[in-house]
Length: 322
Image (cartoon, rainbow, N blue to C red; front, side):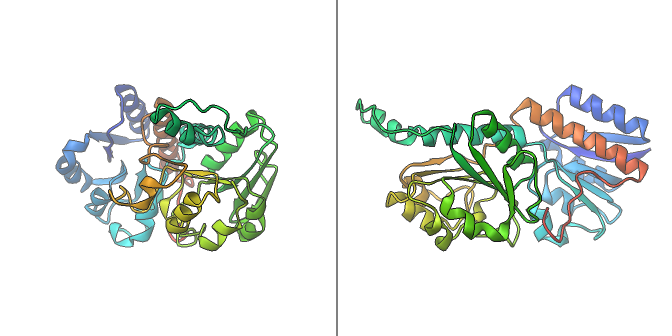
């Protein structure tokens, strides 16, 4: 049997059984390793053609005989930026686009916190005050712009629709129409869309094209009181002008689950910016059971594709970064 190296921290016994049953039926023998078994996994990897993990240094230790690396994270920019991680230049790379549900719930949570002025009310309560008449806004009858219309952006759009959003505009590289959005425009039209964007949600991959896509000039295009939520990559926002716009009261608020760098230095200006909700890259992760279950299911389905010689459903174009 061909060997599969599985190096994950989130697998339950049920997950292992699901992988084992699928693999053995296809002529593969999975070997499971915990995070504290790096050296053991590295040794096993020398005789494997499939690796299921999320560890760049383990991938770097793989021989040229490795044919497929399944990354259990959605973001694969480290692997696309550094081709030297792959001893085999033709090694297939897939990701796990199963984080849409948990990240969409996070987006709804922080949007409601911003719309209902929670950062300001937290300050009132912290100072033992009792001001309770701040004007609030709602998701209902509101408009939203979502940068990125993949798994995350689509899940966000569906939940906003369920809460009564009036209009949801998506922007993507191709601008292809999708059912979850009222309109989808090419990303080249971003400058046209920003002046009418009351709520901007960013769910973009980390590529050369997305670095500082929300720069100083584009932050200035947003209307007075707009909200910004970023759950994609921290590099997508030029952070200094964002802080300036928040502290000046020109933006209504922001919620960042991703920053640049991570973790933030103790003296970084984002820590003290006004009306800013910071979370330490927790919107995705492997902390929701559904996410873990789907992660394993996606790997098993693509293992069936791999064994049959079919295209992998989650295949990444390493030159594009997604």
